[in-house]
Image 1 (spheres, rainbow, N blue to C red):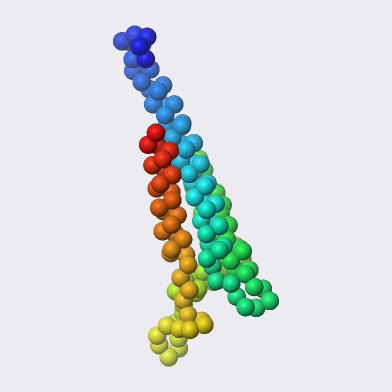
Image 2: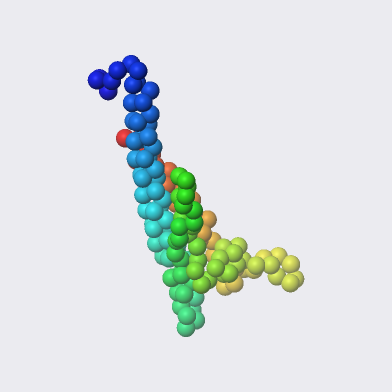
Length: 133
């Protein structure tokens, strides 16, 4: 910016800020995509696999989709495809008629909360690397 006239200074600063905004937006979208991909992979490996003939259907069903795109908004949601109704039961167990919660074979098998925490840490790390430059 050594060749900028004082009258054009504001325009030059705005041009540089707009270029940085575009770069930052691209890096953030890249971090979102990579984090979603890693989280899906993590959930597929850590999800419970049943013992029935449909073994692993719930675990294989994890996927991500773009949920918001527009004026600067971009996001992805990681979700269980066909086994979406099982997520709460598998994560927390279920209540019994006699009171209390299930234990043993039908008990809770927490796997989503741990994957979520790993995704948060991974995303934070990727953003710090991308924007820290």
